Amino acid sequence: MHILQRFNKYLFLPLFLLCIFTFFSRNNFRNVNEVAPGLLNQPVQYTLNNREEIEFSKDNYEYHLKPLYSYEINALIIGKMDYKLFSIYKYDSIFPVDLCLIWGSNVANKVYKDRRIKFSQDCRWCWVQWEGEVDFSMGEMSNNHLLVNDRGLERKINSLLRGDQIRIKGKLVNVEAKAMGKDSPEQIQWNTSASRSDNGAGACEVIYVEEIEILKKANLFSDTLFKAGCLGLIALIILNVIDFFLPFYRD
Image 1: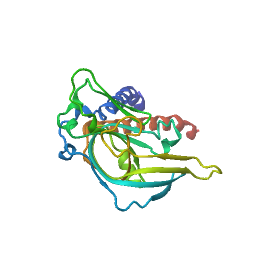
Image 2 (image 1 turned 90 degrees about the vertical axis):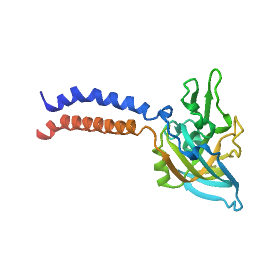
Image 3 (image 1 turned 30 degrees about the vertical axis):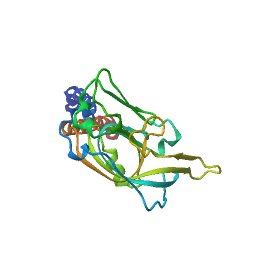
Image 4 (image 1 turned 135 degrees about the vertical axis):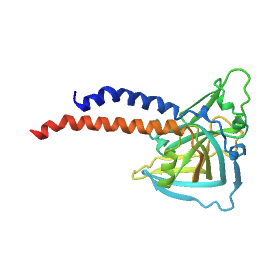
């Protein structure tokens, strides 16, 4: 039997199943056991003396940010939504990534492990629901719209998974964005929340990210297996493509 046929017979399905299984296990925040001490603290917010506007152009939009507060949060990621991949509204390209975060007592008592609690995230919202008596603090959870103007920070944010423990430093900002290159430019305005105790529309923090640190990476074993399985699967597909076209070049 052709060696490539052996690879297809014995490797393709196991590699495919490995990628599927580890895709979900690498994003499982309920596996987190050790919590970084900083996550027990509340977010730190200070009024800025210098509120000079931040301006930059990116992805065919001109950004005008009005900083209100300096902001630092240490938290556990229980939800990540990349709106570049699942775009619904025009402003999805302006705020490409949302992180749903918990901290304080919600990580100290490991309530996130309780499977009666269901987290969900979509359409710029983060929800939590549960049945029965659950010691969950709604004031220690937030949905955060991230604004970045740095390729290195973008790559780091793209690498984040549910279960990662992170520190974000930056500014809470009100945002005005205008589409470039149009006679009647589209204009979008979005104001940040300045309180962790609010809820509903307008309760999300809009953070201009200046620093981000991964304090503890989650599910490293599953993440490594996922990457290895996907690389193996891609290599096998490439070999099959080469094998398919090789006779044409021989002729």
